[in-house]
Length: 212
Image 1 (cartoon, rainbow, N blue to C red):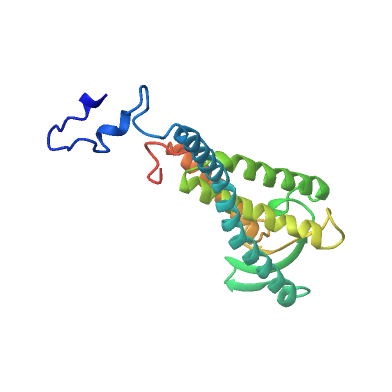
Image 2 (cartoon, rainbow, N blue to C red; image 1 turned 180 degrees about the vertical axis):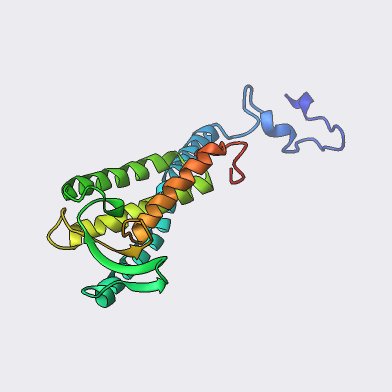
């Protein structure tokens, strides 16, 4: 109605501010479609967050695996067929062995079992990481993933054949089985997970997680 077009509070008649509701029941904004866009944006953001964990862990794993494989290649080139080499006296020695078993030479008669377990562990870590937002948990799981994949590469590329390949080990400590960098990553990642759990740091972030 024309009587609504009266200048008030310094707003002249016909001003767009007063004309927003010129038609009955017209919404203040033309944003009826905004909620749909907001839901779409939220879905995209949620999808991106769900892949943040696997991608972060893959990045960390891509650091661990090349280091592990390079050190094994170096050991094959320089230590194979030679006696143990003292690095720090008898405390740390380079001793080249091919290990058909699991980490630290366990279960040497069940090589194929460890190959299957390594594949399952790798898939489980990637799947679980979709719900992880804590930086410390992503680091621990990424290191664990890199170690598992590092030894899995040996299972498929080292002799005697795919799935039953022997893992290259070359690090030896007193009264301890010979191991490699991947074994260190597996144990280090698992130990970090235990520590985070004891400290109350939640995988999904929480009040005790400084990265949340």
